[in-house]
Length: 357
Image 1 (cartoon, helix red, strand yellow):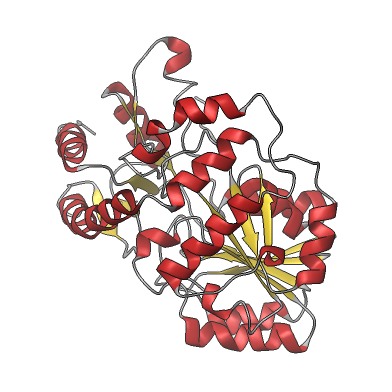
Image 2 (cartoon, helix red, strand yellow):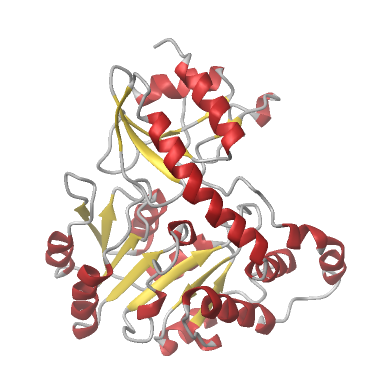
Protein backbone atom coordinates (compact mmCIF):
# COMPACT_ATOMS: atom_id res chain seq x y z
CA UNK A 1 0.00 0.00 0.00
CA UNK A 2 1.38 3.41 -0.97
CA UNK A 3 1.23 5.87 1.90
CA UNK A 4 1.04 9.64 1.39
CA UNK A 5 4.15 11.72 1.96
CA UNK A 6 1.91 14.20 3.82
CA UNK A 7 -0.80 13.89 6.41
CA UNK A 8 -4.38 14.64 5.47
CA UNK A 9 -4.77 12.07 2.69
CA UNK A 10 -8.28 10.85 3.43
CA UNK A 11 -8.90 10.40 -0.29
CA UNK A 12 -6.81 7.38 -1.29
CA UNK A 13 -8.27 4.95 1.23
CA UNK A 14 -11.36 6.95 2.13
CA UNK A 15 -13.42 9.29 -0.02
CA UNK A 16 -12.39 7.79 -3.36
CA UNK A 17 -13.54 4.40 -2.07
CA UNK A 18 -16.72 5.89 -0.58
CA UNK A 19 -15.42 5.12 2.88
CA UNK A 20 -15.61 7.49 5.85
CA UNK A 21 -12.31 7.93 7.68
CA UNK A 22 -11.44 10.07 10.68
CA UNK A 23 -8.20 11.91 10.05
CA UNK A 24 -5.59 11.68 12.81
CA UNK A 25 -2.78 12.26 10.31
CA UNK A 26 -3.18 16.00 9.71
CA UNK A 27 -2.89 18.44 12.58
CA UNK A 28 -5.88 20.69 12.05
CA UNK A 29 -7.92 22.53 14.68
CA UNK A 30 -10.86 20.18 15.46
CA UNK A 31 -13.23 23.14 15.83
CA UNK A 32 -13.06 23.60 12.08
CA UNK A 33 -14.07 26.75 10.25
CA UNK A 34 -14.47 29.81 12.51
CA UNK A 35 -18.08 30.93 12.94
CA UNK A 36 -17.05 34.44 11.93
CA UNK A 37 -16.24 33.16 8.44
CA UNK A 38 -19.35 30.99 8.20
CA UNK A 39 -21.61 33.85 9.27
CA UNK A 40 -20.23 36.12 6.56
CA UNK A 41 -20.01 33.59 3.75
CA UNK A 42 -22.94 35.01 1.74
CA UNK A 43 -21.51 38.52 1.83
CA UNK A 44 -18.11 37.15 0.84
CA UNK A 45 -19.69 35.18 -1.99
CA UNK A 46 -21.10 38.41 -3.39
CA UNK A 47 -17.59 39.88 -3.45
CA UNK A 48 -16.42 37.26 -5.95
CA UNK A 49 -18.00 39.24 -8.81
CA UNK A 50 -14.99 41.57 -8.70
CA UNK A 51 -11.24 41.22 -8.36
CA UNK A 52 -9.67 41.41 -4.91
CA UNK A 53 -7.82 44.59 -3.97
CA UNK A 54 -4.52 43.99 -5.74
CA UNK A 55 -2.66 45.54 -2.79
CA UNK A 56 -4.69 43.55 -0.23
CA UNK A 57 -4.73 46.56 2.11
CA UNK A 58 -7.54 45.40 4.40
CA UNK A 59 -6.02 41.92 4.64
CA UNK A 60 -2.59 43.29 5.50
CA UNK A 61 -4.08 45.56 8.14
CA UNK A 62 -5.88 42.61 9.73
CA UNK A 63 -2.55 40.75 9.93
CA UNK A 64 -0.89 43.80 11.49
CA UNK A 65 -3.70 44.17 14.05
CA UNK A 66 -3.63 40.45 14.88
CA UNK A 67 0.09 40.39 15.61
CA UNK A 68 -0.09 43.57 17.67
CA UNK A 69 -2.97 42.26 19.76
CA UNK A 70 -1.64 38.76 20.46
CA UNK A 71 2.12 39.17 20.15
CA UNK A 72 2.65 42.87 20.93
CA UNK A 73 4.57 43.24 17.66
CA UNK A 74 4.17 46.22 15.33
CA UNK A 75 4.40 45.14 11.70
CA UNK A 76 4.21 47.21 8.52
CA UNK A 77 2.54 46.43 5.20
CA UNK A 78 5.83 46.32 3.34
CA UNK A 79 7.11 43.65 5.74
CA UNK A 80 4.45 41.18 4.56
CA UNK A 81 4.48 38.67 1.70
CA UNK A 82 1.08 37.09 0.97
CA UNK A 83 0.74 33.63 -0.52
CA UNK A 84 -1.69 31.02 -1.76
CA UNK A 85 -0.99 28.93 1.32
CA UNK A 86 2.24 28.77 3.31
CA UNK A 87 3.67 26.53 0.57
CA UNK A 88 3.89 29.44 -1.88
CA UNK A 89 5.65 31.61 0.70
CA UNK A 90 8.06 28.82 1.61
CA UNK A 91 8.92 28.31 -2.05
CA UNK A 92 9.60 32.01 -2.63
CA UNK A 93 11.82 32.20 0.45
CA UNK A 94 13.72 28.99 -0.33
CA UNK A 95 14.36 29.77 -3.98
CA UNK A 96 16.37 32.83 -2.88
CA UNK A 97 18.93 30.49 -1.27
CA UNK A 98 21.79 28.70 -3.05
CA UNK A 99 23.02 26.40 -0.29
CA UNK A 100 20.28 25.39 2.11
CA UNK A 101 20.57 23.88 5.60
CA UNK A 102 17.50 21.99 6.83
CA UNK A 103 17.07 20.98 10.47
CA UNK A 104 15.56 17.49 10.42
CA UNK A 105 13.33 15.60 10.89
CA UNK A 106 11.04 18.25 9.49
CA UNK A 107 8.19 19.03 7.10
CA UNK A 108 8.82 17.05 3.90
CA UNK A 109 8.19 20.09 1.71
CA UNK A 110 11.41 21.79 2.86
CA UNK A 111 13.52 19.07 1.25
CA UNK A 112 11.48 18.98 -1.93
CA UNK A 113 11.74 22.73 -2.38
CA UNK A 114 15.43 22.67 -1.48
CA UNK A 115 16.22 20.09 -4.12
CA UNK A 116 14.06 21.96 -6.62
CA UNK A 117 15.68 25.39 -6.20
CA UNK A 118 19.00 25.16 -4.35
CA UNK A 119 22.43 24.12 -5.58
CA UNK A 120 22.98 22.00 -2.48
CA UNK A 121 21.07 20.86 0.60
CA UNK A 122 22.65 19.93 3.93
CA UNK A 123 21.11 18.63 7.15
CA UNK A 124 21.43 19.17 10.87
CA UNK A 125 19.72 16.45 12.91
CA UNK A 126 17.92 16.93 16.20
CA UNK A 127 19.88 15.50 19.12
CA UNK A 128 19.13 12.19 20.84
CA UNK A 129 16.38 13.82 22.91
CA UNK A 130 14.80 15.22 19.73
CA UNK A 131 15.77 18.74 20.74
CA UNK A 132 17.44 21.36 18.56
CA UNK A 133 21.23 20.99 18.55
CA UNK A 134 22.18 24.65 18.33
CA UNK A 135 25.94 24.07 18.22
CA UNK A 136 25.58 21.62 15.33
CA UNK A 137 23.19 23.95 13.51
CA UNK A 138 25.65 26.82 13.79
CA UNK A 139 28.56 24.69 12.59
CA UNK A 140 26.64 23.33 9.58
CA UNK A 141 25.33 26.80 8.78
CA UNK A 142 28.87 27.96 8.00
CA UNK A 143 28.71 25.98 4.74
CA UNK A 144 25.32 27.37 3.69
CA UNK A 145 23.81 30.76 2.96
CA UNK A 146 20.34 29.95 4.24
CA UNK A 147 18.55 27.60 6.62
CA UNK A 148 15.03 26.53 7.56
CA UNK A 149 13.48 25.01 10.66
CA UNK A 150 10.13 24.93 12.42
CA UNK A 151 8.92 26.69 15.54
CA UNK A 152 7.57 24.30 16.63
CA UNK A 153 9.27 21.47 14.83
CA UNK A 154 7.07 19.13 12.83
CA UNK A 155 6.86 16.13 13.49
CA UNK A 156 8.26 16.37 17.04
CA UNK A 157 6.54 19.50 18.36
CA UNK A 158 9.46 21.06 20.24
CA UNK A 159 9.93 24.82 20.20
CA UNK A 160 12.95 27.01 19.58
CA UNK A 161 14.92 28.26 22.57
CA UNK A 162 14.98 31.96 21.68
CA UNK A 163 18.11 32.79 23.68
CA UNK A 164 20.12 30.01 22.02
CA UNK A 165 18.68 30.82 18.63
CA UNK A 166 19.80 34.43 18.85
CA UNK A 167 23.38 33.17 18.50
CA UNK A 168 22.46 31.74 15.11
CA UNK A 169 20.61 34.90 14.10
CA UNK A 170 23.58 37.04 15.14
CA UNK A 171 25.82 34.90 12.95
CA UNK A 172 23.38 35.11 10.03
CA UNK A 173 23.12 38.87 10.37
CA UNK A 174 26.89 39.33 10.42
CA UNK A 175 27.43 37.06 7.41
CA UNK A 176 24.51 38.06 5.15
CA UNK A 177 22.68 34.73 5.47
CA UNK A 178 18.96 33.95 5.63
CA UNK A 179 17.05 32.13 8.37
CA UNK A 180 13.55 30.87 7.56
CA UNK A 181 11.35 29.88 10.50
CA UNK A 182 8.10 28.05 9.78
CA UNK A 183 5.53 28.97 12.43
CA UNK A 184 2.52 27.16 10.98
CA UNK A 185 1.66 25.73 14.43
CA UNK A 186 2.96 28.49 16.69
CA UNK A 187 -0.42 29.66 18.03
CA UNK A 188 -0.97 26.25 19.62
CA UNK A 189 2.09 26.77 21.83
CA UNK A 190 0.57 29.56 23.90
CA UNK A 191 1.64 33.11 24.51
CA UNK A 192 5.00 34.67 23.69
CA UNK A 193 6.44 31.72 21.75
CA UNK A 194 6.68 33.33 18.30
CA UNK A 195 9.91 34.78 16.95
CA UNK A 196 8.07 37.75 15.45
CA UNK A 197 9.39 39.83 18.35
CA UNK A 198 12.84 39.52 16.73
CA UNK A 199 11.79 40.69 13.26
CA UNK A 200 12.87 44.30 13.71
CA UNK A 201 16.27 43.28 15.09
CA UNK A 202 17.22 40.75 12.41
CA UNK A 203 16.79 41.46 8.70
CA UNK A 204 18.09 37.92 8.11
CA UNK A 205 14.95 36.43 9.70
CA UNK A 206 12.01 35.31 7.54
CA UNK A 207 8.92 33.92 9.30
CA UNK A 208 6.15 31.92 7.63
CA UNK A 209 2.60 31.79 9.02
CA UNK A 210 -0.77 30.47 7.77
CA UNK A 211 -4.43 30.02 8.67
CA UNK A 212 -4.28 26.31 7.78
CA UNK A 213 -3.66 24.68 11.16
CA UNK A 214 -4.82 26.96 13.98
CA UNK A 215 -7.86 28.27 12.13
CA UNK A 216 -8.77 24.87 10.69
CA UNK A 217 -8.96 25.74 6.99
CA UNK A 218 -6.43 23.79 4.90
CA UNK A 219 -8.78 23.96 1.93
CA UNK A 220 -8.72 27.76 1.98
CA UNK A 221 -5.20 28.44 0.84
CA UNK A 222 -3.71 31.41 2.64
CA UNK A 223 -0.29 31.95 4.20
CA UNK A 224 2.05 34.86 4.64
CA UNK A 225 5.67 35.72 5.27
CA UNK A 226 7.14 38.35 7.58
CA UNK A 227 10.52 40.06 7.36
CA UNK A 228 11.96 43.50 8.09
CA UNK A 229 14.16 43.07 4.99
CA UNK A 230 11.84 45.32 2.99
CA UNK A 231 13.93 45.33 -0.17
CA UNK A 232 13.88 41.54 -0.29
CA UNK A 233 10.14 41.42 0.44
CA UNK A 234 9.55 43.94 -2.38
CA UNK A 235 11.50 41.81 -4.87
CA UNK A 236 9.64 38.69 -3.77
CA UNK A 237 6.25 40.38 -4.10
CA UNK A 238 7.16 41.54 -7.61
CA UNK A 239 7.92 37.94 -8.59
CA UNK A 240 4.36 36.81 -7.76
CA UNK A 241 1.34 36.65 -10.01
CA UNK A 242 -1.26 39.37 -9.42
CA UNK A 243 -4.28 38.42 -7.27
CA UNK A 244 -2.50 35.29 -6.01
CA UNK A 245 -4.83 35.23 -2.99
CA UNK A 246 -8.46 34.70 -3.93
CA UNK A 247 -11.45 36.38 -2.31
CA UNK A 248 -12.27 33.43 -0.06
CA UNK A 249 -8.70 33.17 1.23
CA UNK A 250 -8.55 36.92 1.78
CA UNK A 251 -11.75 37.15 3.80
CA UNK A 252 -11.29 33.84 5.62
CA UNK A 253 -8.10 35.31 7.04
CA UNK A 254 -9.69 38.66 7.90
CA UNK A 255 -12.58 36.97 9.72
CA UNK A 256 -10.30 34.51 11.53
CA UNK A 257 -7.82 37.08 12.80
CA UNK A 258 -10.71 39.00 14.39
CA UNK A 259 -12.49 35.99 15.92
CA UNK A 260 -11.58 36.39 19.60
CA UNK A 261 -13.94 33.64 20.80
CA UNK A 262 -12.51 31.06 18.41
CA UNK A 263 -8.94 31.93 19.34
CA UNK A 264 -9.64 31.76 23.10
CA UNK A 265 -11.61 28.51 22.79
CA UNK A 266 -8.81 26.86 20.82
CA UNK A 267 -6.11 27.86 23.28
CA UNK A 268 -8.18 26.56 26.21
CA UNK A 269 -8.79 23.27 24.39
CA UNK A 270 -5.15 22.55 23.56
CA UNK A 271 -4.03 23.33 27.11
CA UNK A 272 -6.41 20.69 28.45
CA UNK A 273 -6.50 18.08 25.71
CA UNK A 274 -2.74 17.80 25.14
CA UNK A 275 -2.20 16.60 28.72
CA UNK A 276 -5.09 14.12 28.54
CA UNK A 277 -4.17 12.64 25.15
CA UNK A 278 -0.46 12.38 25.91
CA UNK A 279 -1.09 10.59 29.21
CA UNK A 280 -3.50 8.10 27.61
CA UNK A 281 -1.15 7.31 24.71
CA UNK A 282 1.63 6.46 27.16
CA UNK A 283 -0.48 3.63 28.62
CA UNK A 284 -0.88 1.75 25.31
CA UNK A 285 0.96 -1.58 25.21
CA UNK A 286 2.63 -0.93 21.85
CA UNK A 287 3.93 2.54 22.76
CA UNK A 288 7.55 2.72 23.88
CA UNK A 289 7.84 6.50 24.22
CA UNK A 290 5.64 9.55 23.88
CA UNK A 291 7.72 12.61 23.09
CA UNK A 292 7.26 16.01 24.67
CA UNK A 293 5.36 18.40 22.44
CA UNK A 294 4.23 22.00 22.57
CA UNK A 295 1.37 21.84 20.11
CA UNK A 296 -1.50 19.83 18.64
CA UNK A 297 0.27 16.63 17.58
CA UNK A 298 2.30 13.94 19.31
CA UNK A 299 5.19 11.84 18.01
CA UNK A 300 5.30 8.29 19.37
CA UNK A 301 7.91 5.54 19.23
CA UNK A 302 6.41 2.08 18.90
CA UNK A 303 7.46 -1.30 20.26
CA UNK A 304 6.55 -4.72 18.93
CA UNK A 305 4.84 -3.28 15.87
CA UNK A 306 5.80 -1.20 12.85
CA UNK A 307 4.24 2.08 11.86
CA UNK A 308 3.05 0.44 8.65
CA UNK A 309 1.22 -2.31 10.53
CA UNK A 310 -0.39 0.15 12.93
CA UNK A 311 -1.39 2.39 10.02
CA UNK A 312 -3.14 -0.48 8.26
CA UNK A 313 -4.88 -1.68 11.42
CA UNK A 314 -6.09 1.84 12.14
CA UNK A 315 -7.53 2.02 8.62
CA UNK A 316 -9.62 -1.05 9.43
CA UNK A 317 -10.98 0.84 12.43
CA UNK A 318 -11.81 3.88 10.30
CA UNK A 319 -8.84 6.08 11.22
CA UNK A 320 -5.91 7.55 9.30
CA UNK A 321 -2.68 8.13 11.24
CA UNK A 322 0.65 9.57 10.10
CA UNK A 323 3.41 7.10 9.42
CA UNK A 324 6.68 8.87 10.15
CA UNK A 325 9.17 6.73 8.23
CA UNK A 326 9.53 9.25 5.40
CA UNK A 327 10.70 11.98 7.75
CA UNK A 328 14.48 12.16 7.45
CA UNK A 329 15.99 10.80 10.67
CA UNK A 330 12.97 8.66 11.60
CA UNK A 331 12.03 5.10 10.63
CA UNK A 332 9.05 2.74 10.67
CA UNK A 333 9.01 2.58 14.47
CA UNK A 334 7.55 6.10 14.68
CA UNK A 335 4.05 7.47 14.09
CA UNK A 336 2.45 10.85 14.68
CA UNK A 337 -1.03 11.45 16.04
CA UNK A 338 -3.09 14.62 15.74
CA UNK A 339 -4.99 15.79 18.81
CA UNK A 340 -8.73 16.28 18.39
CA UNK A 341 -11.64 17.03 20.72
CA UNK A 342 -12.23 14.88 23.82
CA UNK A 343 -15.04 12.78 22.37
CA UNK A 344 -13.11 11.85 19.23
CA UNK A 345 -9.93 11.25 21.20
CA UNK A 346 -11.68 8.86 23.58
CA UNK A 347 -13.19 6.92 20.67
CA UNK A 348 -9.83 6.78 18.90
CA UNK A 349 -7.99 5.61 22.01
CA UNK A 350 -10.60 2.92 22.60
CA UNK A 351 -10.33 1.74 18.99
CA UNK A 352 -6.53 1.47 18.88
CA UNK A 353 -6.40 -0.05 22.36
CA UNK A 354 -8.50 -2.94 21.03
CA UNK A 355 -6.29 -3.54 18.00
CA UNK A 356 -4.71 -7.01 17.99
CA UNK A 357 -1.09 -6.65 16.90
